[in-house]
Length: 124
Image 1: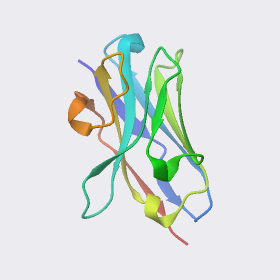
Image 2: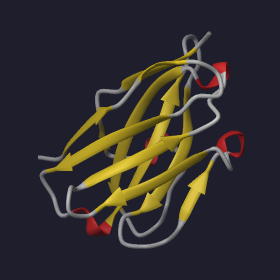
Image 3: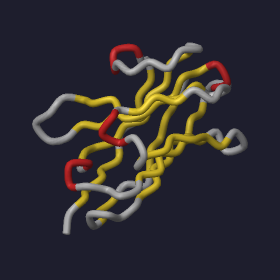
Image 4: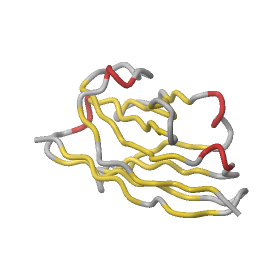
């Protein structure tokens, strides 16, 4: 049973930083793609970033390139989303997702496993 548990959300001022964590359990994730999506109030779920656990490939949505970084810690079975220079439009619930694949998908329907989400609010 795959479980993904996110943490690290909160309230931050514009220009600030947060680091989200996604602890993955129930599998060996070396053959999995891991991703972060977000959903703002009244909007659909949006792709943010993704990586292949065992590789160097990374995908980012254009709006976060240069500000957000996805990474992993093998020893802790954890994927991170470092978010810098946060903007009010980054406000959303952020979700971690996983799929067994060597690709790095960007569509939410391509992912099989999801966490419960963590709220990020960027406001002064």
